[in-house]
Image (cartoon, one colour):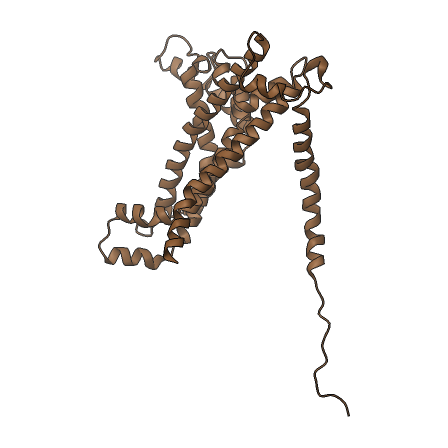
Length: 321
């Protein structure tokens, strides 16, 4: 008599095929990200110039962070690194403030159903376009506009209008060059930030706004009490990614600072690394140590910002339980 119990079927696992599909990514990541990172860390413990193969331990880190009494070269490295790091922070904070304010205003404006702006798709494309233009092209454009000679576009217009008698040296002015870099960075990235905030606003349940409207909430009150708190995770993401990009700022400041007397105010941490790596007698150890320090600073600040902004939410969840 045959058993009436159902026969067990052998389950086929397809998990291994998933690993095969994602394997190319991890291979590329290991070759182009993990290996360079490990090699940079090892290089940071070696010497500079003629002693590039000599193991010097933490000497490069000491030179960059603290200098060395009686060692002019070490003190020069320290002064240059911290000055460039300060420039990086100033340029990033300046462009981030402009970028986030402009992006938030446009995101709210485009998503407000009461205004009903026509052609919002066209405007979204237009504001995002600077983000896809190469930094070299943007730098060349602004160099043409704000050139120090009479052939610069702005100088030419002012001279022809009789507003000035001699060309203005825009790129030789510390304040103007810094403001120019901030505006360029804001102009290039505010479209991307706006789309991120816009997607967050579109994800908010419309019934929440309807309930607020029925309760008599004003537009300003609704924005600060409903929209801003719900957008907090996106704000954290935007802030951290902007901070990472800002601390690694290189192309625009470097392309604008070449050949003008305010170059020291436009040199960023990334420019410091590049200059020491590509000079006549390369300081490979100093460049690598500066890269590792910048990596650690970025990681620590990113973790701090994330923990600081999510700690309150975690406490609320624990209390609700």
